[in-house]
Length: 197
Length: 255
Image 1 (tube, rainbow over the protein chains, first blue to last red):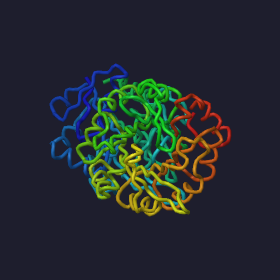
Image 2: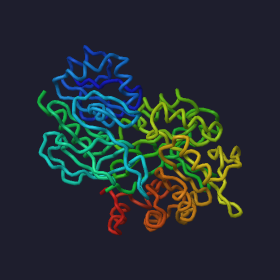
Image 3: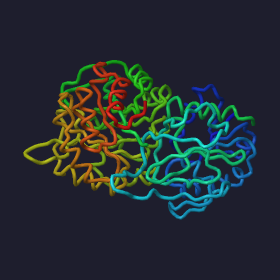
Image 4: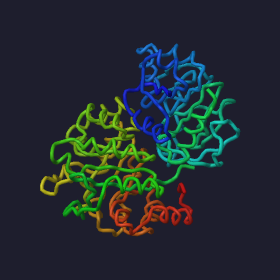
């Protein structure tokens, strides 16, 4: 069973539908016991990282998430939550993966948020990116980004170069929305479902 | 590289896809799910679902359809039509929409844009602007889904675009009413003006008639995406062919 953490109150349904299309058994939950026992965990998120972090605290989920040992995938703001700190609202995050979330540098002719399909390069052969061609396109919607670090397995560039996909031990994350990234997004989710639990 | 988006729009009335000319005389264009699925498969970069009479009828978009469409497509999904309060918006997002687009309700109550952005994040909030070019100025119109109820507002289009950006909109869809459904090309001048007015993404809407129109709008206006309806519904333009055409002309496109 896949536990999809119900932390942000909305916009999770498309993640559930994407998992259903792959034939996965997914449950939306904020119950720490259900999350701990799940074979895999997905942490989605939209809105501001600080607000999402507050919701996790209110639901007493922060310790539950940091102590998980099964494969965990953070999506969009859910991925950002895995890092140490966000410039957005000066928020402290879960600190599972060292690193900071920064605001895109404003430039002429650069619209913010970074919204649309952008390509990713892979410097790595992590199982999460298995069978994905170089420069595959994914759908992004965000104004803040995780910096590139040793945990980066996919890089994207929008004026600033940032981590589009990350992995550290059992924790993985993608800044884009795999549930809305057509066939390439479905492949990432399938790869995640196939990573040994 | 961030690509330009090709966005088919399903204008929906009474559970069917329809299309009018300059927002009048709507004709039946077919089944909602068939169109939605076909566009996702043909490589559309996003899908807009617009319940055109929801606002003018004083009701909210038909939610049963949102769920059905969200289940079958794997591309971003934006929903519009009569979303007046946070609860409406939350329900639509919970039914599988990724973004919500507001138009007439934002004109009724501009602070609503800020409430939406605070509740769901600016990335979720699209503001649609229906703009008519008249006597040398661009004027925002309201309740355009029903020709009998359409109102001319006192708002200048560029000023309203700046205002909705300040209020927290994450994207603007500019519907150029003079061009709607007439297939003579996008309103290049107006789109250039709006691109200069705001820093958030702008989607061009109204006037697509042939592949060259898409080339022009991307080359000449800096629009981030181009929305069209009739040319896709009637299969006059096939999305996969259009994207290949644009890519061959060095427009950044996801193939």
